[in-house]
Image 1 (tube, rainbow over the protein chains, first blue to last red):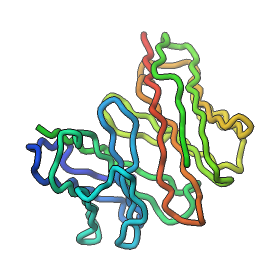
Image 2 (image 1 turned 180 degrees about the vertical axis):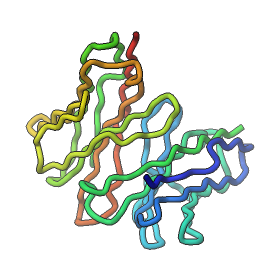
Image 3 (image 1 turned 90 degrees about the vertical axis):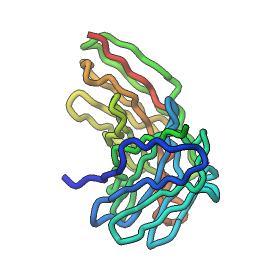
Image 4 (image 1 turned 30 degrees about the horizontal axis):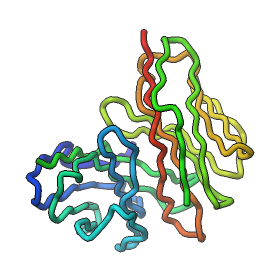
Amino acid sequence: EPEVTQTPSHQVTQMGQEVILRCVPISNHLYFYWYRQILGQKVEFLVSFYNNEISEKSEIFDDQFSVERPDGSNFTLKIRSTKLEDSAMYFCASRSPGRAWNQPQHFGDGTRLSIL
Amino acid sequence: AQKVTQAQTEISVVEKEDVTLDCVYETRDTTYYLFWYKQPPSGELVFLIRRNSFDEQNEISGRYSWNFQKSTSSFNFTITASQVVDSAVYFCALSEDNSGGSNYKLTFGKGTLLTVNP
């Protein structure tokens, strides 16, 4: 069964450094999402992306964050200057076109980001 | 604004017991979608079930069953004859069908940590 893949599984970065989290969505999916889960807390929506542009973003997704689909297969999340509070598990998700009823989001296994 | 409340932070049961995980949601939309996800200790999110707002039929899948009641805005999840492998955090999530848009972002509850002891 096709799946969403995320790399790396764990990323350790010094505070203030840039980090890029990578995702390869399922090949025929057109809608892409990033979510964040701080340790022990709930999963929070960051951003959705469709047709090469952001369709919605949350308050968390400030100017330090950006997303890109550089080559038609990868979907990346960049954090420009990381802060300690960016430490979290980041999940990528994708889905096919259609109503959410019959086209649920498929999640990757996540990237654990640790900021030192 | 959409909101999901899972009032049970942690539940601990002994194997073979039945357990119900509660989920209460808030939304202004008349069309919306509800989901349950399982997060085992390994950390990934595993999709379990989805329901749409116009289908209140309850569903059973093996040892899992779901009770959707619009009158109380609840979408509860029951595991029958629980097993140690059921130990995980379970998240309820809501997606609105607003403005005919196709975003369908998920709003998650805080999750319920289920521990099944042998």
